[in-house]
Amino acid sequence: MPFFAPSFMTFLLILFLVVYFLSSAIKILKEYERGVVFRLGRIIPVKGPGLVIIWPIIDKLVRVSLRIVTMDVPAQDIITKDNITVKVNAVVYFRVMDPIKAITEVEDFYFATSQIAQTTLRSILGQSQLDDLLTKREDLNAELQKVIDFQTEPWGVKVTAVEVKNVDLPAEMLRAIAKQAEAERERRAKVIHAEGEFQASQKLADAANIISTASSALQLRFLQTLTEIATEKNSTIIFPVPIDLLKPFLTQEQKTVSPQSSGEQK
Image (cartoon, helix red, strand yellow):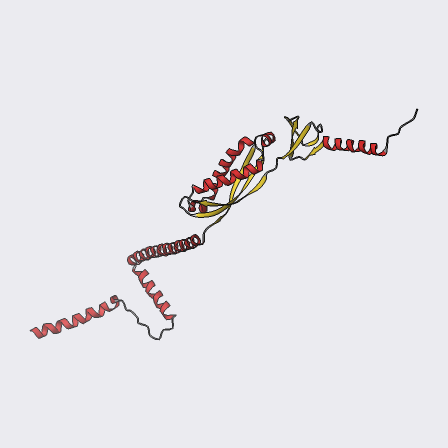
């Protein structure tokens, strides 16, 4: 009876089928990955992480990452509530919380989240004024995060944060804002100067009240003023003499003049 040994080509074919079966059946999922498996088109429990074995041809595995995704929202032309056209771009942070919903509820959850972010950015910021867009950035970020997360929740996607990055203003608005900032700085300078003058006047009034109640303080102040004048190296100093120093001489003069006047009358 003749013996037919398998040929080398048959051996290679069998080896290829074994390798293909093993590579198709054995999957290794990382710690941050989960596997959504369709068995004959039906969902079975999520697999992973680690070693996962599936049936080739019968099962189809879709990898889903559970890490936070950083998605850049392209610049959007937005007309604010006060009719000013600006360009605004943002960044959205989200992650998949339910792998099955992320695969079965929407065709491409990344693209869908991107489109929702763009439309929501135009809608929310279009209801705000320019001043709010520039000064109340945190409130707008919170509102954007709330609205986008509400719309992506049925897809098993959680939006953790939304940040408005840049607000590009027209050239004429930049000039107007610069003028406004300059006027604001001038207003503050005038207010500070006025407050300084007011405080100085209060201190002078307090000093005048103290000096008026103590004559010795007035004399000390007078001597201090003379000292300050002397340090200026002036060639001529006008020395003010208090009228109290001349009062005795004026009284004596009046007494001398009075007898003479009375003698002439007699």
